[in-house]
Image 1 (tube, protein in one colour):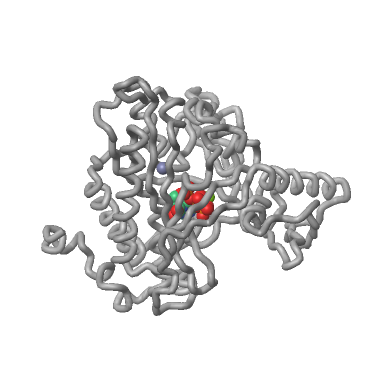
Image 2 (image 1 turned 60 degrees about the vertical axis):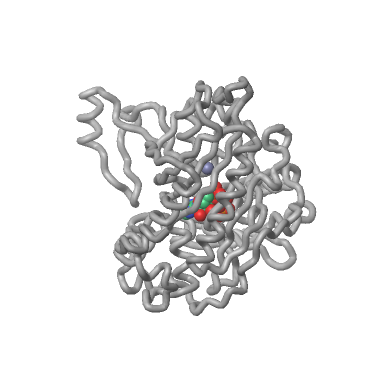
Length: 404
Ligand code: ATP
Ligand code: ZN
Ligand code: MG
């Protein structure tokens, strides 16, 4: 495979706050993009799996400028509000933990953006999950369990296909037709890691792999009058986001575990509950010894002009992120987020309060592999060097559990 660098100077200046987002979204321009970087002057450098032809180059550049235009025109410079800043907390580790984890066989890559986790990392994730579950319970949540899929009709209804289609993954199955099943059995084989088979043997898509946990709770409450204000759920689930060439190490996975606490109720109760749960989450991150910052954030849209839609207009101050320090590359990574959706889901799904008005909703979610990865990046892969709160598994120590 021959590599080739394609350079593009975008039309107009790119705002610095969108830089990372623009580079990340360039992954979706063309299947031949192998990696993207931007130099200090703002020029984009695409490493291509094969050189672009002249006519492809024109199309490619148009696509790039289209994405940049949408991102720039629908985003506003954030008023960064730092709520808490513990980024300077001293942490003992400075190397990329991936190297050790892979070299020592603690994790094994099973596919693009997919890793099997051995006891060290799985144990840490388990510990984080049980502590977060307790956090949910302390906020009045009751446990729920949800399927790892969402109906396509639901995602259509909430305009997900129009606005966030790029990282979706889909569930299909073989059609109930013996001839087609036999043909599939006879012809299916992998070529260069890709399964080839008669495409007519596949069903239509009714289910989409869930990109986040909380949607299933809104579906659960759809067309109901809430019996309590707020309804509070805690749930854990596997989520899927195909983030293309951005899938990289344990930081960004195709399939990952997310824990959430979800609030649905009146605006005042949901906002108060989010505040309180954020404080509890901060206390937990401190207990873990995490070097992090809590600040506001936004999810820019790059396909559609979502900025014009009222429910998502005031995007700043609707989302806050716990961003952990990654000492080995002097950056931060979102390990958790708090989101307030106003009455968007209440309206779309007819979730109503006793007075007939649409319910508001909000959630706090942490990515378990990411949080584990950030802790390993800060404290290393030797358990002896971990903070006590992580080293003494609470789940194995009933005394500590009951003293809480
Ligand atoms: P990012 O900006 O890094 O893509 P996000 O804003 O898309 O993150 P959220 O939608 O807020 O993330 O999801 C909540 C949490 O889920 C994140 O804080 C992170 O811990 C985790 N998460 C999100 N995407 C991934 C992924 N592809 N792999 C692993 N964890 C993820
Ligand atoms: Zn959520
Ligand atoms: Mg993302």
